[in-house]
Length: 125
Image (cartoon, rainbow, N blue to C red; front, side, top):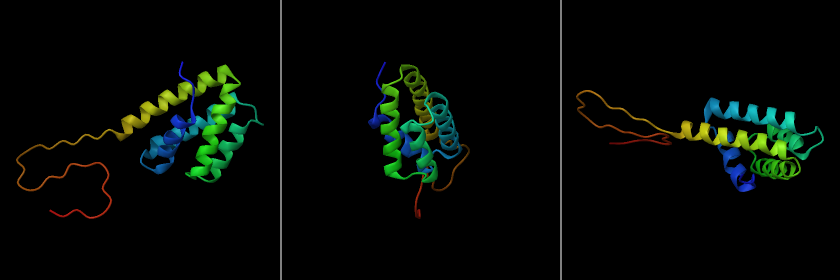
């Protein structure tokens, strides 16, 4: 199995807190928090890092600290690593589904059509 890495966790955690994942991001955060509390001891660095990130949602330093804590704690506990890896695969799938965009245009269109996902700012035709 692939090792759990900081470089895999940081972008995923960042997406969860960026707001682009919406309700799915909230659910992923809740499920990760639950996994961490369930598989690591209360005194683990991961439990503390989850608490800190929960207090400072989206803080880049807290995201990196949690990713590093998860990697370190998982390296000492193969069963915890397996559960964390399972969460990671599910989270990546959920986020890729959230990021998918489907645009459908039907009927007789007489004018401009714009197909996009996220738009920030004005649009002019």
